[in-house]
Image (cartoon, rainbow, N blue to C red):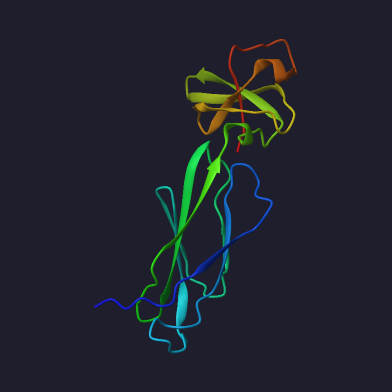
Length: 165
């Protein structure tokens, strides 16, 4: 029979940068039966379809990787002890609004097909904070409005992409 250790309480660190979710918690100190928890071993953190094992009981926070696209995201955390017993998962949610999904780098790129594959070619710059189109991406980069680009040469591709999050 699985015995759950004491539940984790969430606190959110603010401000949260766009495209990231920052959660923090107080480590559990009691077992469900009221006895002292003395063998906390770590945490299991899950978000979206990802799983992250944090095998350090001193850990009390987690930041998702940058680049959460617009939509509803969740993070669940469970604590576990050295005998393999787990707490129940506690879940927190964040909605990333489309206007929060913005450029995180200033270089814009186009992709050029070569014999050895597709290469990324820088074609200009864009200001930080320009809203990106999360629905259109190539190789982890997202479409940005051409009107926001300062071109570095004569090439003016129809679609340009940048790092966003």
